[in-house]
Length: 556
Image 1 (cartoon, one colour):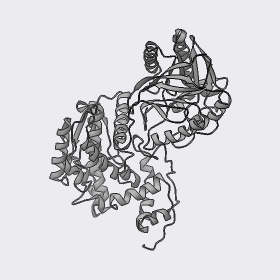
Image 2 (image 1 turned 45 degrees about the vertical axis):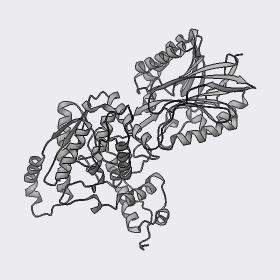
Image 3 (image 1 turned 135 degrees about the vertical axis):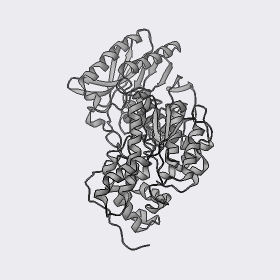
Image 4 (image 1 turned 120 degrees about the vertical axis):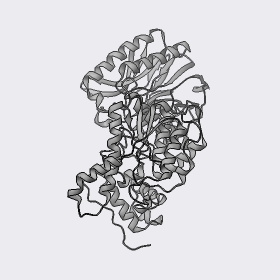
C-alpha cells in the first residue's frame, strides 16, 4: 500500500463534439503528467465530447466514437499514470455519465453519476440513466471515491463512499460560472468533505459553450474542508498536488494556490471568455457591431476587443437625423481608443425609401414606434449585409433590462449571432464599464480606459426620435433593475417589492412588460450566463401566459 500520491489536475477547455481535438488535449495533459511523475491524472467531466453536449449524447454514433477513443486512450496508461476519464457510456440499454478509471493500459473500473441535475441550466435526467451509489475503487492499496460533479452537491454519495472505505475523493466536474459559484462550491462541497472526513480533488473544465461559461477554478480540500490547492480562473491550468498519508488520513503536502476571481473582474472575464470561445469555436474570423455612441455598444465593442483583439472587431456607426453630434464623437473616440476598424454608413437613404414605399398606406396616421423600428431594422439590414458579404459575425448589444421589458426591436437591434450583454442589467453594464476603465489586466487586449467618460455619464437614449431618453418610457434604471431582479432572479411576490418602496403602478407595468416580451426573447441570440438566472437556459416561461401577480392599486 502506497502512502504517497501525486495527483495531476488538468483544467482543460474542450469543444463540444470535437472528439479528436478534445482527445488531443487529454493526451497533452497525459504526457505532462507522465513527465511530472504523477500517479493519477484527473480530467474534467465529459471532456471527450464536451459539456454540456445536450442531445448530442443521444446520438448512438457519437457515444460509440467516445467509447472507441477512450479505449485507445486507456492504452497510454500501460506504464502510468492512471487516468480518471469521464464520458457518456452505454451499458446495455442504458446511457450513463461515467467516470472511468484507466490503468495498466486498460479500463479497469467504471462509476456512474448517481445524482443527475435537473434544475436551472441542467437537464441530465432527460438524457442519462441514474447510476447506483458508487463504491470506491482500489489503486495501489488506496480506496478512492469517484463522485461526479452533482454527486457532491447532494446528500448520500460522500457518506456512502466513506462507509464503504474510501480514503480520498477525486471528482471530475462541469460546473458553470455564475456570480455565486465559488462561494456555493466552497460551502456545499466543504460541508460534504467535512462531514465525511474525506479529502477532495475537484477538477472543473474551463471555457465557453453557447450560453454557459466554465471558470475552471479547480481546487483541493483537506479532510477538514480547508482549501489546500487552487487553480486559476477562466484559463486552462494544470498542477500536481502531492498527498501523503499521516495518522490514517491523506494530507496535501504540496500544491499551488492561485487567487480565484470574484466580483467585477470575474464578470468581465466571463463575458470575454464566453464571447471569445463562441466566436473561435464556431470558426468566425471577425465580429461586426453597430456603434451608437452609447454605453451598451461601447461595452460590447470593448469586450470583443479584449477577447479577440482589435484586428478582429469592426464597429459601424449608422447615423440618422436624430443622432446627436455627441454620439458621433463618442462612437469614434471609443473605436479609436480600442484601435479597431470604424466606419460610418448613413442610413437616411434606406429610411427615406421605406417612408416613400409605405406612404400610401401610412398616409393620415401619426408617427409612432413603427417609424422608430424602421430605423432600427434599417441598421440591422445594413449590418447583416456586411456580415453576409465579408463574413464577420454580427454582435447584438442589448442588455438584460431591455430584453426583460421588450425595449428592443425584433429583427432590428436584436439581430445578431451572439450578445455579450444578454445577462447584464443596465446598472451592471455601467458598473462594469467603470471597472474596466479603471483596470487593464495584462492578457486583455483592449488597452487602458477604453470607454470615453461621456459615454458613461450621459443619459441613455435610443435616439430614434427627437430628444428621446430611455427614462421617457421606463423608470430610472436603478428602480427598473431592482424590480426586475425581484421578478426574474428571485421570483419575489409583489408584497416584497412593495416593501422595498416600489410603486404599485411601476410593479404592475414592469411585470406585464416582462411577460409580454417573452416571444421576443425566444428569438434573441445566445449570450453568456453571468447572474443566478438568465433568459433561455434558466428562465423558461410560456409565451402565451395570462397570469399576473395581483398588485394593489393604492399608491404608497
